[in-house]
Length: 314
Image 1 (cartoon, rainbow, N blue to C red):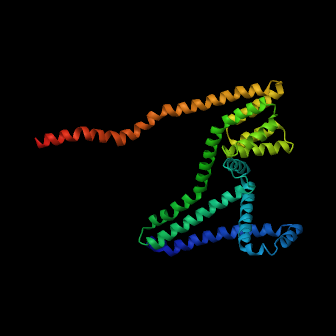
Image 2: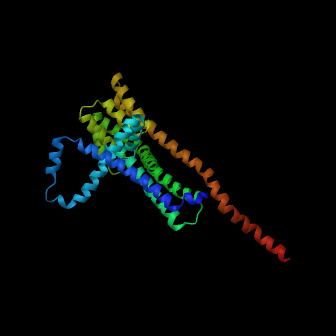
């Protein structure tokens, strides 16, 4: 029997539709089981929450509630299956600027949705636009977009996290300079953090958010060293973690915090200058590739072609 008759386009469409329907049924089943387990107080609040002004936005809120329940069920599933990987992903999302409690669930939901959407477009291209392709080509046409959509959220997360990390690394020496100024002006470390978070709000918004969170934690009663260590984990920079350790050691040993901040600020400024010099020294090596590929052939052509033309004419 010919394999092409077994794996026709209609069979591929049926298999893909079955997989999509299984995933949707799984998510909606989990959402329904969680909604049934809510308390009576929550049910009464849900009943009396929506008034006349909110009824106009009922479809939008219903869709948002369904997405929230799906994200929550996904988060619960992965928390039970791999809690260590879930904590690592949660920290990466925080470093990328996603502070919502259900960010992990929304991330997995976005990955599943992107994979399903790209798989649909690949199936459409394999069955409608190019129906005469071989079976292997059709499978690759469906599988390649599916994998692209599945890993697209990871790529976006890494790109966003690295961008914020570069911005934090560039702005942290300025934060240390402001810490020195605030300490010499007589402010405490807690007051300095709150003041600096307000001052750098427009220049370094990412660092301002993290400092503001650290200030809120300190005001809520968390010790300063723990708040600074948490601040260093959220930012993801070794310099910030070293700053937290330096503050803790200065208070334990009884040394001057302003002197320690001044030394650490000079070190951060020197490190930033060294990074700039390293980029400047690497520039000639990076320019050699475009010069060799685009400029050198033109120069050789201008120098050699006239000579070749004269020799040929002669």
